[in-house]
Amino acid sequence: MATEQVVEPVAGEREQYAGVLRFYELAKRQEWQVRDLPWNDLPPIPEGKGSPQRRARRSDMWRSVLTQQLQADMLACEMASQLLNVAPDPEAKLYYSTMVQDESRHTEAWLKLINDVGGIAERDPYLDELAHMTLEADTLEEKVFQMQVFYERLIISRFRLIARASRGTVLEELCNRLATDDGIHDAANRLLPIFIKHALWRPKARAVIGRLMYERDIQRLEEDLQEGVKLAESLGLDVSDVELPRP
Image 1: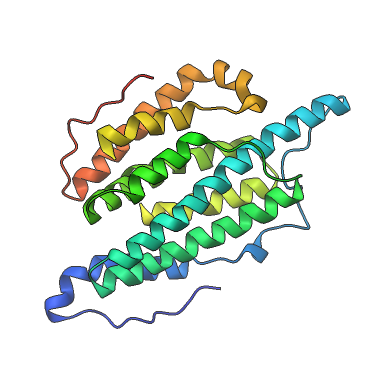
Image 2: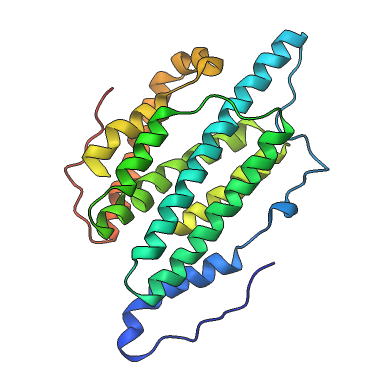
């Protein structure tokens, strides 16, 4: 259930933070609970067909997808908590408090979904590297840019892709909600090579698909990068020299 407005409209010298508070209020209105997902009405993931071996391979593939998303949101919890702690202004802290809540809720949902399909699969090493680089960034501006301009912006398209590939499942419903949440939240050269490795990385269960989808994945990365650059510029950040390095 959405939360009613709890912050009075800003006035005087705090007017410059009105935009931050608008995002805070929007995030509160968009709140949802894990119990709201159709756990008892839809299958958790697409149900495979064919022989038991083929269904098992397909299940392993989806478990690897879920594991990667769980890993990403657990790391996002750490990043959001860090931003909440270091943000200097009360308005920013209010906003980042909603991000911490969102990422924690996402983690809860992934944990429940993974438990329903057989447990955690192989971990993505490049996601750990991405998170470490963001958590160890020197300035608040770097942390915000890396997490919100690129990390979250680039992951939204992944949620949409997963949703399209899992029609009629709890997974589709969850990814659609996550795309909305991270769209509300919405580094550069040093971060991108690792993000590309993460985006192209596939565990053994999805290695064949990774080879088949390589060129399309590169095209999507280029499109997402351009959107990220536009968003950064709208925030007053000059990232015009950012290019997509080829792995």
